[in-house]
Image (cartoon, rainbow, N blue to C red; front, top):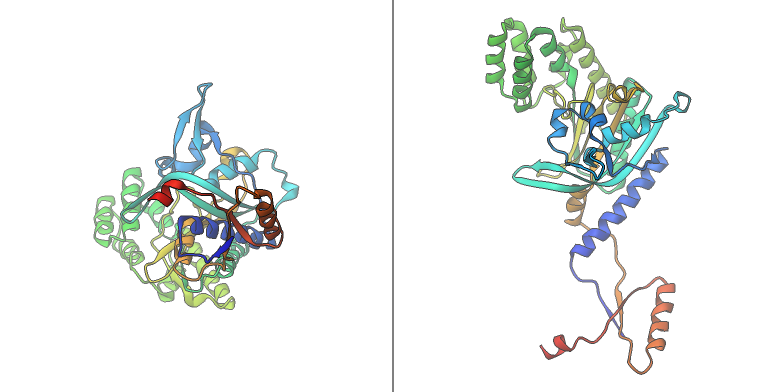
Length: 368
């Protein structure tokens, strides 16, 4: 019988770290009043298709079950959770605070890498509209990451109705609206100008849309948008301005970068949209936003806002730094003469909180 010190990071250590961080995350969310939800592995395609939108639909896996029904495999948790929570939703129980921790399967592209499986942890606030709910979700997301040990992060904050209000007000063609949205996502000011010419948009609106494409907009640009003649755009800018003031009170305003070109990371987003990134490589650790129309697809219209943490990204980030201390492993090799004595030693060690591995002779290894 002998002790073995822990060796360097391994696959087992990574899995252990993820489990530790998932459990910690759920405890943090429970401390904010978010109850863990049971998210179905399978959900009906026909009921969810109109809610998830074409962008999400392209990422999800679907198949036919034995009865011929088309199903989604759990991929984007927000629409699935909205479908599940809408069943028997009691307005008297609102607001509803839900958390989740699940493995998901969908096509995700991160630079040159494509991922088909990942682990998601997140939370949803249902039944509260406006600035106070947006601020709650931002506050909880920040606390979640800081409590998990992320010290270096920034928040990319936008509102889908800043550009969206202008696009809807001045472009009647669906094709041109789609072209404009794609140009905004790419921050392609030249393409924005070309679509404006095709749609007959006047010079003032064109300049505003081109301004939204700037990489590092500031409060001055946001302040100018609050006076825009398109009411929806002005209201969205005012909402962002108020949130920035709130985040200043929370002493995190210096971490916020405005994204005025946002048109919706997900097609179901209707209000704020934000990403939280960390380290010098800009690793996206999570994203969230408001989706007030999503629950209406299932017959129970409710305002909602949430945040999803990309746990695998966080684990990769944290594994570069100090991992949770792991006790040395005690190796116990049961003898042929008195195995029960050795196993009793192992049992007592486990009761004392030690980590134990039973080792057996491997003739091939010894001969090799």
